[in-house]
Image (cartoon, rainbow, N blue to C red):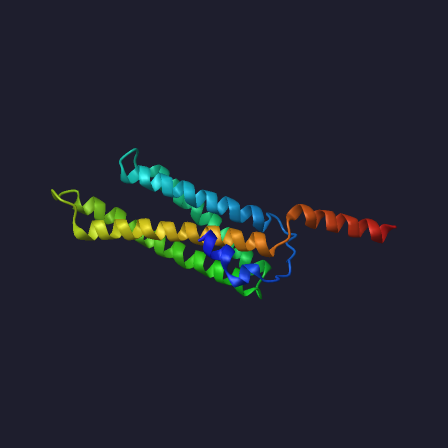
Amino acid sequence: MAIAVFTGNWWQGDIPLLEDSRSPGLRSLTVWTAVAVFLQLILGAALRHKAFGIVPHLVGAAIVTGLVFMTASALKGRFPSVHPLQTCARALHILLGLQLLLGAGAWWSRRYSAQFPQPLPAMVTLTVVHTVTGALVLAAAVVTTLLVYRMIRAEASTMLATSSAKAERAA
């Protein structure tokens, strides 16, 4: 995904930098969201391979859900007219909603098919689609992070610009 983003015409073009003075900064929020999604995928793999029960995966899902909603809400609220960021917010919301539904379906089908000697096709299908959708959530989180880093000025430079502007006004 990163190679596709980096080599696209949009990335190579001249894009004005946006200011984000709110807290938490979108740059950090998107990184934390992508990291949480990645860790959640690891927890899902550990659950699938019976390293532990479902509780750590559910806790991870709650954390990821909270971070995705914080990130998407910040993108929508702070930059309502910036189309690429709105698209990222929408993609995160849609994929997360689908992922949560698929996760519930996969868990239910696994419990139901435990009484059969072989896994049922519905369980296998739901588990595979849930896994693939998790990868898509990670891809969307990474692309969102890359776009935010490309479009939004770094927090440190924003603070320096703000403090230097205040110093100039005071002088």
